[in-house]
Length: 214
Image: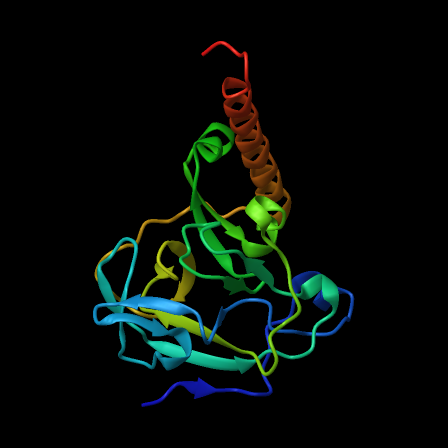
């Protein structure tokens, strides 16, 4: 059974949908994104129902559904984000759709919200370690992967991406429920993380300044 392809379907961006604006693919994984599987890294677009994928919490899990969507023209405010190599432990440049949920781990998340792990929309990452909006790749295709239960999977080495679960499936166990934050909460979290990293960089620069005391 191959991946399901729906060229006419899109996920509306919530704010645009409320205002009657254009609907675009805002959540999902670009088909060229490397995903960790027991047999090595495979492009997300190659994964079909039944394919085994390495997960963050539950070992190998089979894909239940793979929905392929063409990335339509989007206004600049809904462009994807380009993540430079190693900005998030990714071995190569990575493109993320703005509403794709990303799991991050940071001490500042625990300080703010009581949990070091946080699920945030990718667009909240803009400005962190060079992450910026980019023009969508030509003829881009996105993939929505679904498992029996919500899973977090590995992309491009160490980036953790959220994938939905089937509410009707009975998997016999419960995946960990990660805290998911609104855009405003996520942006505040990232702003605090950036400030923390800037402070560390400034302290290191001061320590290495000629004439400074160790």
